[in-house]
Image (tube, rainbow, N blue to C red; front, side, top):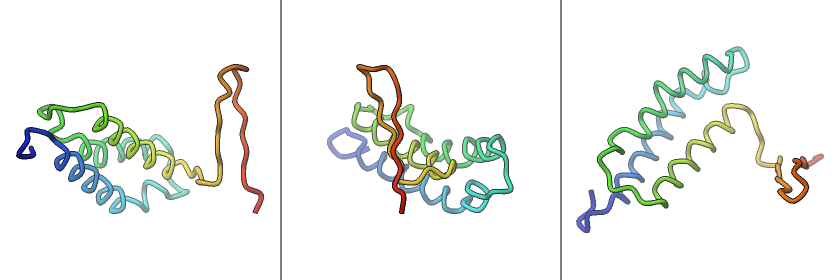
Length: 104
């Protein structure tokens, strides 16, 4: 908790700690020889638990939840091998997905 009663520093510390755990388990989480089911179990047990540890006692704001969600989605994209060059855009008016990828 911060001096003003917020949880900015706690959220930042949890995100950093989760990235540290993610990098520790990187060979399993990004390895080609492991199933997505196993990767998901390792991620949920080791990384996600580290990310959300203690958060039930924080006065969470929307920005804190968004920061944790962005962190989690970034890790999941890395685990699944989605490159930053791939951009998926939802065209809500047409109700379909368009996919563009860099051809380099």
